[in-house]
Amino acid sequence: MKITLRYFASVREQMAQSQEQVDTSATTLDGLRQELIARGEPYAQALGLGKAIRMAMNQKVCDGDAALLPDAEVAFFPPVTGG
Amino acid sequence: MAFTVQIQTQDFDLSHEVAMLRAAQPAVGAVCTFIGTVRDRNEGDPVSSLELEHYPGMTERSIQGMMAEAAERFDILGARVIHRVGLMQPLDQIVLVAVTSAHRGESFQACEFLMDYLKTQAPFWKKEATPVGHRWVDARVSDDKALARWGIEAHNARSS
Image (cartoon, rainbow over all chains, first blue to last red):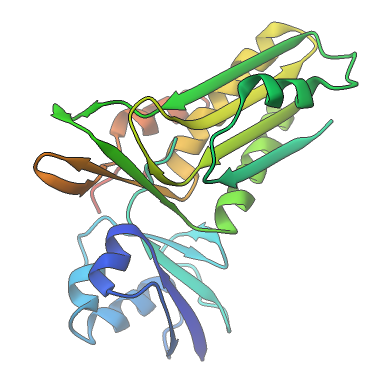
């Protein structure tokens, strides 16, 4: 299925882009992240396992085991630091 | 009464915001406000400027959700959150949280609850300019602990 990926803050810088469309066969957010990491750089460095990465789907924070929805907007970003 | 959130680059005026929140609301007997400002030091280093990035759409939605949660927990009459984004300097105002209630206790608590929630859950990121270069600000475990006092588990600052 086709989804939209969005990157913020340090993840956006490492990805050298803020948004892209991808075709994925992943069924969960963790599955999607692993699929992207397997593509190599810059994904592997920006999203690598063990890094503090938060995920949101359709603008709501989700755990990695959340089911990936068709046409979803999935965002990857570091811990938030507002306020 | 209104529960509103505004993300903007320009500065805000506390008196004006409080006046708007209180206008034609004679049930209000207490207003509690918090303003966060840009410090000139962080982690021991001088900070010359701060750049704030956010996730448009999700930011507003998440803060609206926090205000709904605050209204569930506390007997409050209205709330206003303003968060600035973009480039800021030390002394600048970053964030305003204002809450109204009939009696002071509820607005004091709701104001702190909203700030604790916002610090760990709203999608903002700070990048600071220091003499050793630009760096992204790290999330603090103490902010997760502040939210835990309200019975909400947060893991924003965890390392993986």
